[in-house]
Image 1: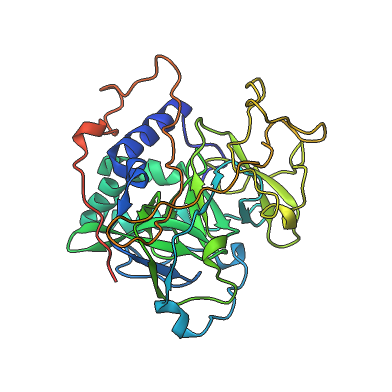
Image 2: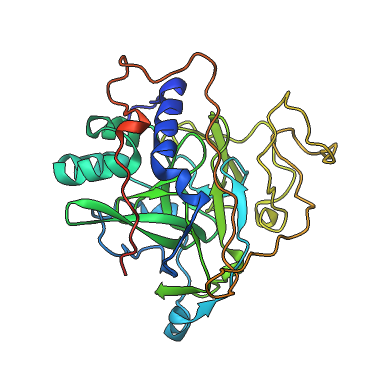
Length: 355
């Protein structure tokens, strides 16, 4: 049973995320992939080559919608500019009051029982194998409230192999202190930021009713660790403040409510990172008097047309790359933290789509 305390020192979490991003997790999304396939993964679908059995807690996720006709699964889509939302956006995630969406201790046991998988999981997550239990216990269980694009990593031949995927809203995930999804609970797969696809996208897998390619979101990690995230209670559609690194035992009503209702959060999307009290307001953007400083106003910039793929003339997907988190001056990865790998020590592994 998980103890009712936070399990993560801010400096250690910062170092973990820096190592993870520098080891190919953050950098991957700054380039495009030649693979044009994006695998659609419904809530309960374990997907190709799952790492482990499911650790998702069904009470934490809404019922999935009925799938759309299968003929839609192989149809190509033109290039899109996908919506990018900060991991600290209120209402980006959901959950149930005082109930975690994933059984983290079961996930720890699954990987502890198979050292080959634990090593592959650690390599994909940018940590050492001995750090896997603490890494998992430092994550926060939530459910997605929007269809979300990620790089999913299945387990094949003793290593993690990456492929582009869209996870259906309602999927149980574990997010880190920067609000980014790191583990999919239905299969135990480590997650990375997505990689843009050159040219027309071909979706595979099982589509669901309501899936719209232009409504898929990309989560951008915050530039600094957040102590809590504001999620939506999927039972009664109210706000919950959940401390990061907890299983929901410290859930409470936020002291300051977001300026929109849970139903309106995706029609009023803060595309910039939420402002932190004391930060200067970006030039040309002014927060509303009724808006708390933790929420940024929506972007008013004109949409960017996706550039064409020179080889095909077809527009490519576009989404801004996640930015590396800010580490306070003086915080470094040192030998006193033996479970953390220096980024240069983490061998790069190319992502290959597994269909």
